Image 1 (spheres, helix red, strand yellow):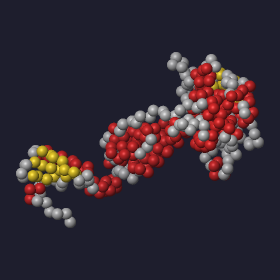
Image 2 (cartoon, helix red, strand yellow; image 1 turned 60 degrees about the horizontal axis):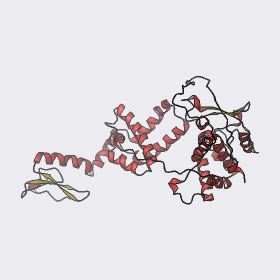
Image 3 (spheres, one colour; image 1 turned 180 degrees about the vertical axis):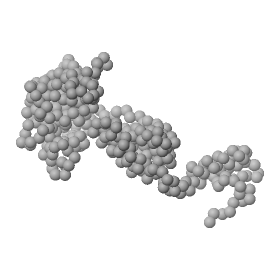
Image 4 (cartoon, helix red, strand yellow; image 1 turned 30 degrees about the vertical axis):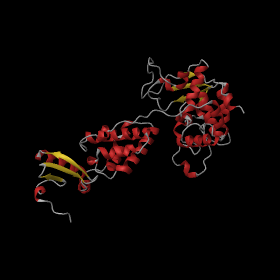
Length: 368
């Protein structure tokens, strides 16, 4: 049992003490075992001690345990949010997948806690455990969750919004021509096809993986960019099948029956469960295999792990080469100019296709 308090301290909150000699009050932080001077004002000292006790004392965990029976937990609210809110956002699949990952991490860390009793410290500690980019993504998800919770009266304030955004300055270096060639030499044929297409048509990973043979019509390859296809007509690309592009398309045709230009025969049947077609390649798998080929090639020994360029950086190499060749890099990338008027409206079945000619000479990468 705890030792009885002295008569001079009996009327004071726990951890607050009065010194008859100095006529001052002191507060004992029982967690860090430190004393703090609370001055001569009795009422001010009592009020401060009460606030600190509520925040620091172990019995707050007991309160939280009781309150959990009377309020939603964060995990319960996340489940509700995913069922009712996310569908209304009409997000792309890649974005939904990112939300799913972040929500799972949040639920694992704080999911069992009552929604309206989650503290700023708990959120900050969670975010501090991630890299700057992952921290900012998780923070954005938490802010959106708490915005909806506050709007429904389930939380008093948005504690996530009070955290600070981390500096997420890009650290990845650019590829060198020698580096890309070395990676390509250590890549399986389907990955070589992906690299060659990335160099030639300057598209994002998701758009490369969505290229289909039935998108080739009347001498053109039709590409609707996933990221911006419903926002700007620049993302609807009609690519002329130049000799250079035809060469890569021919590379993609093999004895594996697939609707996708970039494809592979799956190693296991269970790989096919979440795919549109068994031969389809996911973005995660593409990035993982690219990393394996890059690490095997050992082409960037001077780079740190965070500086290592991935497949996405090949797009930058391609656009730079188009620019240096005096060609319209912005057009082939599908980037809209500031003065461009949107010709495509949601719900319409037409778009103004932007015709481009992918005629870059990539032989310095592909020729042995």
